[in-house]
Structures are given as C-alpha cells and as structure tokens.
Amino acid sequence: MAQNRVPITRLNKFFSEEDFNLDISMGEEWLHGDMNFTVVLYRVDKQKTNTDDVYGEALTDGIQFLSPIELKGYVKIDTPANSDYANSKLSQIEPGNMTFSIYQNYLDQLAIDILLGDYIGYYETEDKVRYYTVVNDGRITSDNKHTYGGYKKFYRTIIATPATNNEFKGL
Image 1 (cartoon, rainbow, N blue to C red):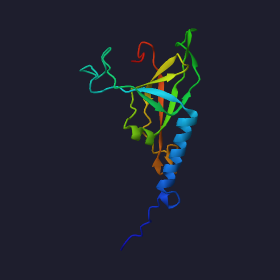
Image 2 (cartoon, one colour):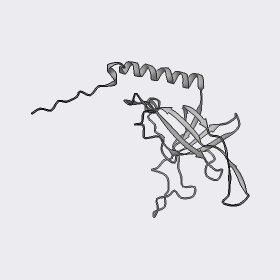
Image 3 (cartoon, rainbow, N blue to C red):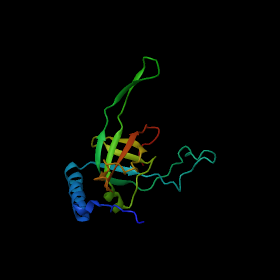
Image 4 (cartoon, rainbow, N blue to C red):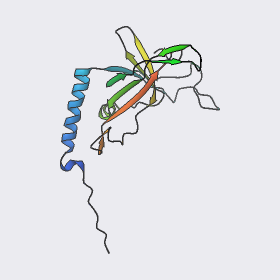
C-alpha cells in the first residue's frame, strides 16, 4: 500500500530565486553604499601559526596572519560595562562587544570566511582603531533570523570581544 506523500513546497512558488537575489542586491546596495561600515579582517593563518605540541595553543608571538581584508557590513558596538573585581571596590570600564552582520553572498563572492579567533579592526575615529577577536563566527544560520522565510540563509552575525593591547595591535 503506497503512502500518501505530501509534496515539499519551496519558497519559490511565490518567491523565486530572482526575487531573492534582487532583495539581497538591494540590501547590499543600502548597506555598502548608504551605511558604509567598514572593518578590517585579520585572518589567522592556521598553517603557519606555531602551536604548542601538547595543547595545540598558539605560542607567544607565534600567530601568523593572512593579508588583511576590508569588509562591509553592519556594525553595532555594545555599551561599555562597568564591572567590579570579585568582591572588591575596584572597578574597571570594559569596552562593549562588537556585533557584525554580513551578507553570506558577499563573503562567497570574496571567497573568504570569518573564523573563531580571527581579529577585526574597526575605526572608531579617523585616528583610532579598536581591535576585536571573534568569539562567535555566526556559522549556524539555520534559524529564522538568518534565513529568508526559514528557507535560504542570507547573512551571518559575528560577535567579537575587544582585544587587549597585549593581545593584538594590528599588523
């Protein structure tokens, strides 16, 4: 006895691939042209980086980088947090995290990827760059927020924390 199969409906019944591409191109035009947020991506060269034989951690001054790349995306910097050290009265204001949203199509066109541990430089002013390290590379894009109608992924959200001056100062 044959089972009745329910046909899988695709988004293209009412929303074609051409419509999807048009929406993405209009979004990229707005983001890259009107908003014009630019960051510099410093990708870690995992092949040339010197690591510890036991734990696989990078040795001091052992991290090697690929050539920096300028990227366009949407930048949001969180409000700085004032935090206390344990139970003491000493406090320090820490810079906020960076949330960086980027179209997947744009990354595919450039044939690059953003990975955990990479660094991002963002010009806060014409003279001052703040560096961040990627702590969430936004690879999981199967949620409704990052897909068009739960059907096709179209952007990633990268979360990065501020890097200390001892950790990274640019190339």
